[in-house]
Image (tube, rainbow, N blue to C red; front, side, top):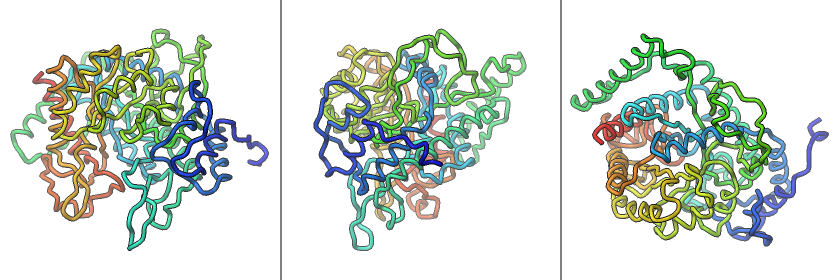
Length: 503
């Protein structure tokens, strides 16, 4: 029955499929000035995946081209409006989730724990910043990860590195890239998104429900007292709203907006879910709550203008390893209407930022681009000021969101070779980012964190007093980079909130 309804792979998919079995590092010659969803295939590409079976690639991409969108233009445009507020200093952006999702993370307990953690963190940040918080989860598609080396040593032999569940398996015998995993990634992403929607519409984020603010892990009494003051203030505010009747459905206390995101690394996947769809009407035409919520959908938009939307997620970002101005990833991203992030690390010269912004946001749309800085605690003071100054002196001044990623620049290995991050370094980089922006007449618009709602032991430090020896106790579960556990993530939110209150 399935064969009877199969459609052939489109021309764009054919170009991608051909590239995916070409020699590594090559690209297809062709017209490069006009953007199409497949024009990236005319550019050199980094972090590429090469498959052995052309027919299997074509079959996977054809299936993806037939699948319905995971997110809609209306949701994407609502997020763009929210991010515009962030760029204007009217809101704060909290983005967080796993370093790399596994297909096994697509279960109710793990999804719920991350939703609840992001909700609690956002409440603390609302208290500290005194402004709304936009929530974006690194969920429902954050499977692939760039790697510094394509191979690794295992039992004396060289094998392909684990690139993520949507590429190959973690088991050493499953390291060959498998295009059928692209289709599995779609269905796991769709199932996760569906459960997020269902959970939010069923009241998982209902602020009438008591929240678990257990602070028993905080050993320092002075710090614990400060946290309890914040918790009491939040609890009293919610109680007051209930008392005066401000907690009706119209107030939004029953649900929240939560958007999804991932790094746009596998362009053959992203291209297959890029659709030419009607642009959503201006947000001023309707006021329905959007994102992954149970909000009522408006009627068909009156505007006939169509744009290309990546419908795999609301927000996608370009990694630090794939942001070459003449490369495939910049070429793909410059044509989609989604809000996008751009990772900026120590290897980024200040002179490169504005040309990239010119390519990605030539119309200077406010909030279109989020600059995600990831330097490391010891390098941020030397690098961030020049990057801020470059944007301030350009036509993009006032249009970007500055977001601090304090995770990737602070990864270290223990003497036994275990990757970890020190909580104090993570906190230090966020604090320095806030200070440097203020000193330069700018402001920090958000944070980008790798975290989990599980009780893992991967990052050391914090009020739990975790040490490197604790990493060997079975609580280290990441298959990629170390994540903040739920207590460390909430503690970071408390400390960032305190920084806002101090001004």
